[in-house]
Image (cartoon, rainbow, N blue to C red; front, side):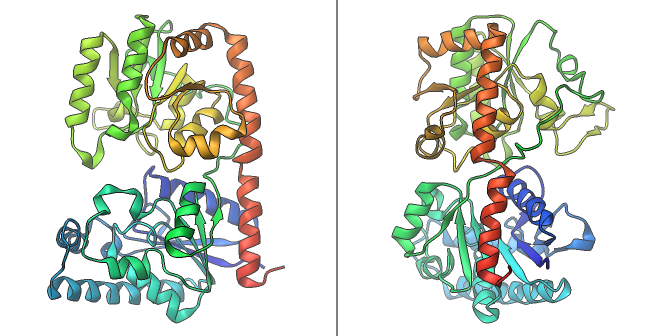
Length: 420
């Protein structure tokens, strides 16, 4: 018999990793007749299956007020402690309301017990689990010790107790082996390693549909142009300067670098530097975030807004030269759409992904002549490219498909609820 599963986070909306992966989990759980419900501060789920509590959003004014007085300080005032407590008590009450409203049998906290973006929500979740003993699978995407912004703070007591907590009725899931090792070392907590996944059992359409067929034309590209897609936000850790250097070395006027996402809340300084670098290197760099959104729609000028999935079939090459990633969703997306990919060998890739046997265009922190030659061959030699992409798809289906996720979730749910 299926269970009612309650997903809990600060936000379920947009294309961030937590929102995307939680939707994949819900899809897999639905195959086993489990019904998913959603609790968050912001969400784009249907109102009939969701509960939106604005105070649970990490960008809520009270959460921001607390964070400003906690991070970068070695001590906190009684007022800060009091307001943390007041907000956590309120949020704990809303968690009780959520579970009662939707008759929740099991909860899945999504990253709120790993990274203290919303301190009161982490405390509320911990106390709720301790009080109710409801079965829980806590999905950790990235931990506070992985981010320098959380290296100095005045809440070591809270980090010890709630990020994450040690509770008998909860199973921990991490997305890479390094996190698994650190969680065990720092907290003495065992965990299950479940990488991010994609639906490799159901390949994408072979070509663009009528809506997305004109994307190249809409951003000013000709049929002869070579579209190099950088499917990331414009932040320093994405290493976009390496993509520019690669295109400069290719020295082919047909090659255009298209960046899909905006800078977000991290400012425009890096974006401006990339524009300067592209001008210096005579590289055609285009930021397409104004034409790419979460859903297909038209903007106020009547222009089409495309989704990222509309764009991949048009790409001749994907660049993913990140300096660090918790996993690397864009890599799986590129493999799913059978687009050759330039990858910087970041640490999680080396440990978790590279041993699987993918054939990718690799770099080690800088662009080499060998890499430039390989990229040229992949672009120009269609049979070679096709063979490479088919190989990668086969490997990804073996290790990163929904089938892999389904098998592991079934095991944990059986352990926690006694399902047979």
